[in-house]
Image (cartoon, rainbow, N blue to C red):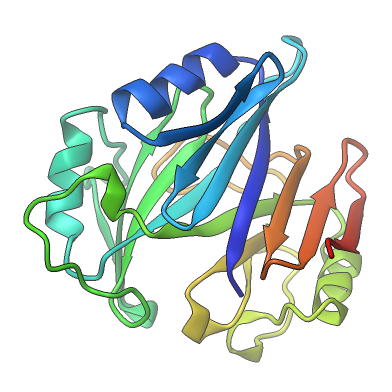
Length: 228
């Protein structure tokens, strides 16, 4: 599975645009009153304006080259304060041989940069820059309807990683392990690590494999479609 585009919502569009484009240097590809889009490696990240009475936030992960973790961490620390878990600002996931660090953006989104040793390529350049970020490789999909949404996604050709069973009370990673990209299907009120944020169902759109679209609407319903 490859994540082509993710559309998220925010009430602080102007601030987010400055944060991602001016502070981090992501390439701005679309920009109007309703929102903006940036290139994240081979993926597109879009933020769209919502009413100020709501404050949507999400968790998403961006993949970096397998050999660039320390360089990426130093680069990010020049721009933001990294968040911590048990007084540590990085984590190693032994079961998938990956390292991550996290920070919060101005809308409260939990942003993860992850070095996947088994699936991400290595880089031959010196140092690190925004151009080294490869893709969006994780996006949460929070819903009270894990069973029905999970079954829909399975039927849509998106498997649970390592063919694990769906779990109603924990985070499910949907996507092929060898692809290194996942939809994080989980319930509300689950704390995101490296934050004090608890998962909430907010609308979003995910486009994958250049052909499939997954939309979570404001009522918590999931709509699946093909984009050709």
